[in-house]
Length: 182
Image (cartoon, rainbow, N blue to C red):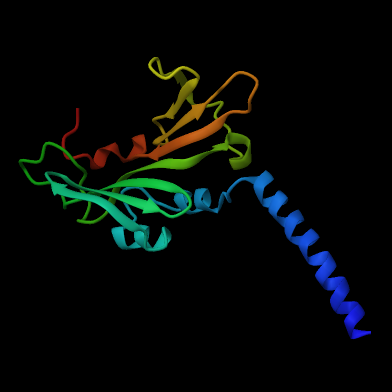
């Protein structure tokens, strides 16, 4: 009886693996990354929080200077994440930046390794300003400055829109924290 069960398991295991593989392929990669990125609080989150949220990613590039520190991460399985961190509070001579502590997130840009369908993220871009990117046919930018969000979407004829990249920057209501106000 044990042999029969073992044989049955061995015969059904390849079918089970094949089924799971096709389901994973059809779903594309997980969108958990999007929920993580949505947790970033611009002008509040720290570098330590970002790196923890991204699962201690590999730093590809880092450059400190002026009003911010630029860091680009390789977020395994997702893509590249570019984050600008504050170098400190405003001074009387500050021309750029925001009046926040050193190491606080100023903006985040995510370039996806593989585009993901907008519908999969449940994004409603109807309240965003839509503009086509002239040097990239079939690619559209959706921007909402009030909430500090920007999405770059591939909109090929006959295909569902796919998100290529996204960025978050300070909301308009936080512009009072800018070092130089226009």
